[in-house]
Image 1 (spheres, rainbow, N blue to C red):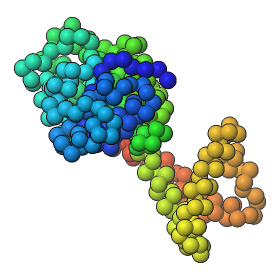
Image 2: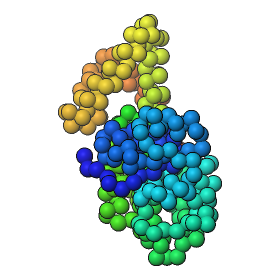
Image 3: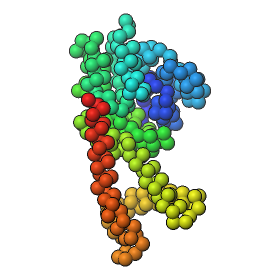
Length: 283
């Protein structure tokens, strides 16, 4: 995997902030000495320093000023305050080129531009490219799926730096920003849908008379095996489904109930509703 020699700062030491730091260190994309983490919670900074060897910062502006790549990983409701602290600082200026990556859900690029670009002349704005990223929680175990979208100031080098960071956490795809609401609905919220389905399968096993441990083991291994089969056979999911659905058999009995309750249509409607809500939040 490629390495990044620039200093990287992560604003926010929550779960996703830690996921980025941990992935960068474990993958050797960056050395701990080249990573800084900022947070208002001293106990989290102490933990991050002790666990990963990264530099702790309590001053958001100082971290921003010291780093060539800055990853914003705070909560949506904290975003405006953090960005105002940076852009409103008396020492705010852009000398060397600086890449700004936001993983904050629901905050569009235009909002970040409004806050960070306001004090800057056009020439300096071009030196502060902004890339918005929608990761998901499996990034915590290096199996994430991220969608990314850049503003007009991002160069190919900026894009490649961002790809390198995100590949340390899993996979990445590039989108127009208008598509990030759909990305949020499908992969960003997607793990919750999978967990919900797992809950339901386990509950079904219990209802059919299995013990809890057996129901859970059967469910998890079945899901892992089905995904492995889908990837290795490279067949469409609908074709694999048909192959295990014998006429008049047990699988057909189950799928008939699902079809009668419009399970597929409701899942599609749920994802569309999530995308619509993401768009509402962004506005």
